[in-house]
Length: 156
Image: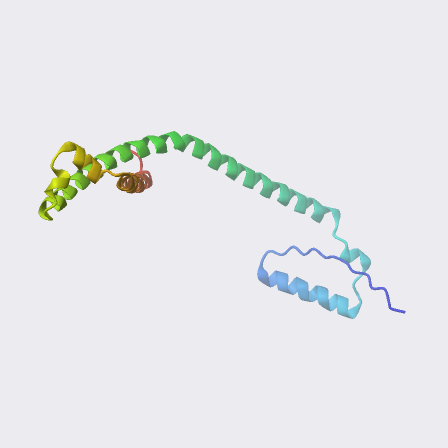
């Protein structure tokens, strides 16, 4: 018949890597020599208490960190939205005026004057649905970059 071997757990607390290696080698040497007693394999109540205290401390630190981040997020969201909307309007004005001037120059210099000869054809040519969507995306990306940079450098 097979021999029944008792498996046990050992919790080792070390201050640094060297002490951990020394303690592990001592435990394995004791097991090898069969000189380890049953009392040494069971963690005592004070080490269980310390583990519980460290676990509770860690949980409270993580919860506090998440709470602080949530509060900061809630405080910064209105400020961020204000700067984003302000930068979005500024970017929209600059990009749309620049796009309008560059497009008019392009159509005039390429001989397509009929496309930009009156107000209706200018709007239909320059601001079609696809071009409008592309401009909206470009304006939003520029506003987001400007806002991130402004907040990173510090608020006014």
